[in-house]
Image (cartoon, rainbow, N blue to C red; front, side, top):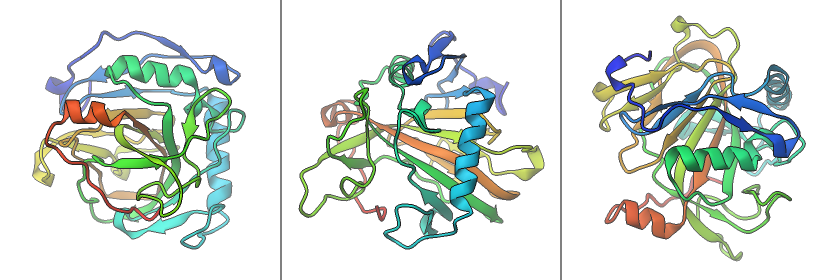
Amino acid sequence: MGLFPSLEKIFKKDQSYELFTDVGFTHTVRPQVYTSPFRHIVIENFLPEARNAAIKENFARTLAMGLGGETSQDRFRHRTMYDLDLFWPEPSLEGPQSPFFSVSYFEMLRKLFDRPLSNDTILSYHHHDKSVDDNYIHNDFTEGYFVDAPLPNGINPWHFQCTHSAPPATEQSRAMPRALAAIYYLNDSWQLSDGGETAFFSANNHTALERKIEPVNNKLLVFEITPTSWHSYLKSAAPSRNSVAQWFFMPPQEAARRFPNKPLWKGSLGY
């Protein structure tokens, strides 16, 4: 059971999914599916141990290179708004990040959230140092820009082909509204006193806390993005808090149908 048992409402019957065959291995997962305060799933042991270790090793090696500048593509960059360092690993169907570009993974999310997801996605590493304050609450209700440069399996990840969070000045691209957000946690030996949970709120207010998701290693959290998908991460006593963050997208007409008269936030996030 979670922090608030009354919120543990299933919106689709739990079932197992066999994933990742298309990227070279097979692993069975069993999502826990909830509706409150907005739809989300939690998957424990999302990847086999060796795959989890490979991502953590790649993450640690990149982080050890230190911070790069505002246009660096091979090192982490700092973002004051979110009090984090972030890095965009090169998309691949063979590297440590390959599970996140699996067609079967996308298909599972389409079924669980009943969303017509496009094949567009963006994946990044997130590193937080120890923090004494909760981060600010936000809803992720915005859009991203893409050009068509798909991997061989048809998944179309952003990786510097254009400016992602603002219209490119010279390149042809298309704007796609965000549909889902995913966080894959990479924190060995996490304990309750460490904090750093992902928090869900019923309103844009820290007093409206509804649920906390513990950032335990090899756990995947995916939640729907709506005008009211209020979330944040809480202060952390641990020396670091690491994760892989990923966003999924839907056609503009689907966003307009689901959320009429609810404009997407438009502004540059610096990439």
